[in-house]
Length: 323
Ligand code: 8YV
Image: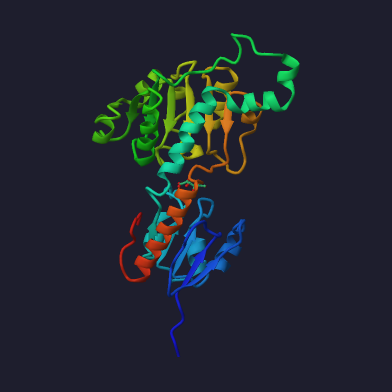
């Protein structure tokens, strides 16, 4: 009697190619499993699972899946949804998708910089709503935005996405500074020629701030009311990393009081809820945590999750290990 194939449980359908031959691959529904119990039932008996950023991987889920689980392949570069110690205690490996998400997310970071600098969302509503028609042709002193050329971009977190974002801004004639725990030679070399600054100094001197640190106990609330108050009145904050890194209530107050020029947000503290006070502001541009949602990035993420699973099912280490 042939041995049963290892089960690979994928919480939602994936884009592009996801090839794990010699396995029983099962895909969940497009909406995934909002109920953790249903997620556990779907994944029960799996040797490998693919999880989404909204899938909490904790003791309860790991117990529901069973002791045969070998790998949690997170469909994301961030892994704050996974309790790593719970996986370690069970000898379960964890992988993520670095590099695969980089270009798509960096595109969105620059998109949000431009959109916030020129108030794209408010301008679009101004046109669609008939307000422009009622207002009449704009005068020379109306809807003045913030330029990128000659301005300083401060990258908070000098990793792959931070580097790719900074690289894109060279074309806009921007200067780059950065903050990281350790000096990053790639940032300080050509073509970025970036300067490493302490966080407060970088925030105070920046015209644009782009957040690219992972969410950890150290970075939760990193950009708080005190640090927002350091920013220039004409400055723009962009966050494509994780919502809880920025104090959302303090940011909404700073935007309401025009203490900074604007913000571009792809991530929020309590997704998919958007902090109420942000919704009525005309100086924030928001997108639904879709940073890596480009054809190339998402296909690469699927392929990388599959490569990690194939490696672990073959008794090897994950290709891109977290644990
Ligand atoms: C998301 C991300 O997975 O890679 C990450 O950590 O947050 C993104 O790739 C995706 O954008 C939608 O949640």
